[in-house]
Image (cartoon, rainbow, N blue to C red; front, side, top):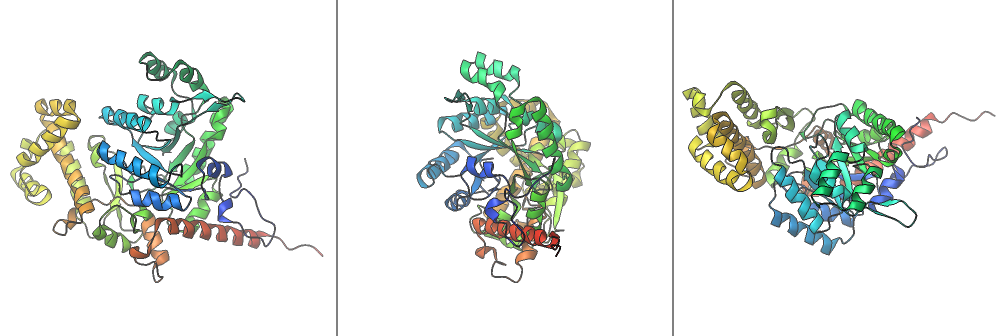
Amino acid sequence: MAVAYAEHIPASGAQIAPENLGSAQFRADHGVRYAYAAGSMYKAVASEDMVLRMGRAGLLSFFGTGGLRPDRVIAAIERFERELGDGPYGFNLLAGGDNPAKEQEQVELFLRYGVRRVEAASFVRPTPPLVRYRLSGLRLAPDGSVVVPHRVMAKVSRPEVARSFLAPAPPETVGELLAQGLITSEEAALAARVPMADDLVAEADSGGHTDQRPLVILLPDTVRQRDLAAREFPAAARVRVGAAGGLGSPEAVAAAFVLGADFVLTGSINQCTVECGTSERVKDMLQEAEVHDMAIVPAGDMLESGARAQVLRRGLFYPARANKLYELYRRHSSLDDLDPATADQLQRRYFRRSFEEVWQETRAHYARVDPDSLARAEHDPKHRMLLVFKAYFVQSIRLAMSGSQDHQVDYQINCGPAMGALNGLLRGTPRESWRERHVDELAELLMGGAARLLSDRLRAMTLPQCP
């Protein structure tokens, strides 16, 4: 199938407008000027100010709810309702993993407060809470079409995950939700007509959790998955496929649209802006990053599974220490199994306190949020070691966000090479300093630059007319 990277290809000599890049339906459905979005980042790194700045510019973005208490999320919802109304914004919804109660709590909160748009991340398949969110409020329109009040943008990096979001909700899950009274009979009956997502994001070599898939392979494959799914389930044809990962320059954005993206989503580059919710010290470090200054480390929240994440490496001990903790977890059965020198190093240099002090704080936390995991740790020394080691990863995020000068080497800064690409582009310009970078202006820079590049390429490819 031929792919057009703009909804209208101009005549020879004409200019492609950034407003015409990507999917017109994406722009119409989300009420935005560009087929562009700013993705969520954990613990409100994608902050209220970032969402408000984007929304006021007529651009879509997602608030980073991961790791936040419900009262903080509620405060953000109420602020966006006051200041943006029905403007384009959404909230991150993280897969619950080993703590499904947290995901369920988030969904109940979103339904209670009328959140109409989520960015679903880290899902390997649609879960009951996510299915409930998607199906709640389904109804028939007068013309017989299905009205879907809750929009889902799902980040995917594997074909089987993409296929699960291109399909309707699993019938067994729908039946369970109906039996529990969590959806109505009408919603259950209409579920088979609605794909689980409105938008899929092919998440390539991104910051944070990553499978490090090359965009030039992942994006066309995801588009292909969509087109194949539509043969059996025609409604899947309406699902837009976007690109994320490595988008730090106009050239990269232009390439994404040529590869068939309906929209693009940025993440890492938005950390180095005035509106980002991290510390100024982190922004100073990100501003100096080059494209090669990243490292792949174990993902702290999924340490036991070996899942990987991409982080800033330059000037930090965190990447080496994160990898060491993972290797120690794999090789040892308990904290007592560590040799004395290693145990001393971890307590003095990594945690800067004793294992017992770390455990008491960890124990109090899990008693509140995940009593089942705590109960297991009380009887399983290896699981207890896992929870203690995970505390280092949590601590490293807190240190980065607070900007602690004494603990800078332990900062965890999730970031991909797009950050280095943007820095190279802006070096020597008025926007070299992050204090002169604003999240909506980066969108203008990338989309406007991509449109100019594609216009120039079209003009260069135009053959001269015969006399």
